[in-house]
Image 1 (tube, one colour):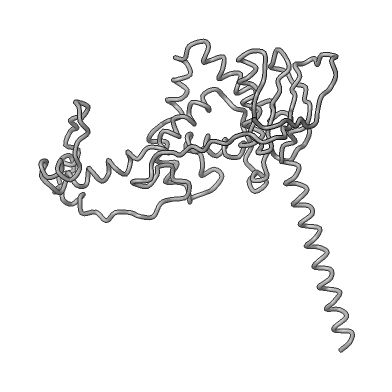
Image 2 (cartoon, rainbow, N blue to C red):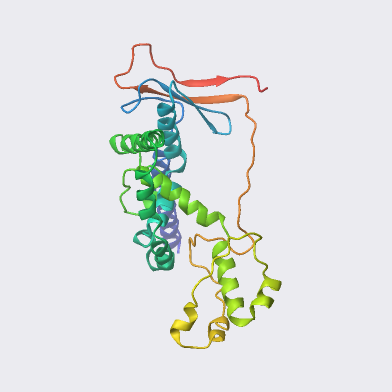
Length: 298
């Protein structure tokens, strides 16, 4: 009996040690993917030093000698803080979520490929003025500079979430930024469910009754659409009586009816600021700066 108890103690102790080692490994890998804000980096793509100053809430403030370098710093800061979110949003706009998440996001990819936002974003890049193109390219260079640092210094995968997936992280392109703006237009607008509701009501009720329940927006912007339902040769009420789907696929981009829009919060800075200085390559000889700067809040 005593030997059985002794072996049980050994087994439990071994399992606890093994669990501790696994947790330590997970913590180490996750910590490697977290950004270090109090550092000095040397990189190509900028013409002069750039400072990314963060207050005690880690809100970045970017200082540079020209706008192009500021946009580079913005891309670098975004990649430090939001790389996972940026990559998921880019895949959403491209209709490529299912490459990571499987069948559960197929309906999302189907919708986004019908909207074809990414093709529109690539076309939009070509018609931007030179100033906007320069800003988009500088921002992309900043994101890619952080990705290059992650790869060259073996800093995990850039964000802890990437350890759960084997997909490669592609370099950032100017079209990616515009695609995310278009995606946010879908995410913040309630048109999708509103228009579906209006279509179903229109098929079921007379026009005067529809205007009473769902009034038109004042003005002359109401478009006259063809009678698409007549093309199928079935009664219109058949579509109006279809059961509504209340379940939504994972990562569905459109908001629920009545929940569209956004809210903004304003934060006032604290006292201590952490700084990252990025030197143009080659780095000038004025020395290396890193650390904290504390100042009295206004």
